[in-house]
Image 1: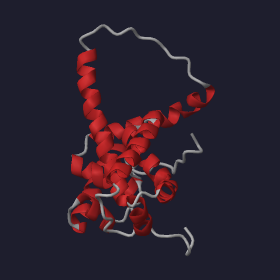
Image 2: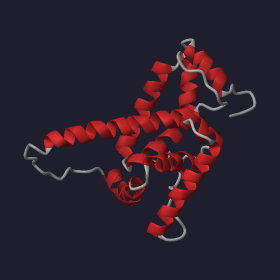
Image 3: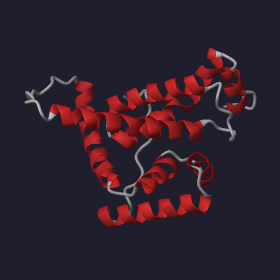
Length: 198
């Protein structure tokens, strides 16, 4: 963003008034961070893409009802993404219960070469995600926002509706638990990913 680029508040106001191009700039500015956040919550490239789209669909639908309280829309977008992932998990769990009642035919899909290259990344992320899933929900959310997505403690506190000290305490507890499980250094950060890498 250059000094001439409008900040998120201006873009959000323009989008709320119906400006698709302003919303497009917000998407371009924050899509990579939201995509990475969704991948880290799901350990799935395909799910991350779906959740990215759903997050911005929710943002578009709520654009005229929300007033940004921070200079950046990113903390709010990451909170929306977290809720989108959580909602999809609940839906998936309900469907899984139904599918378990019916015999499922197992088949191995024919993967494209580029998907095969990502299997190791997804396996490692799945192991980390399994450990993170054992954390209390409040610690998981604070960890995902502050450590994985680089949101400041103050912005995370605003997005989660809690005190900044509480966010710091949750992140510290989460790091300590993961450090005990994986050993030092704690495995809490994932490499920056981009839509182009996929």
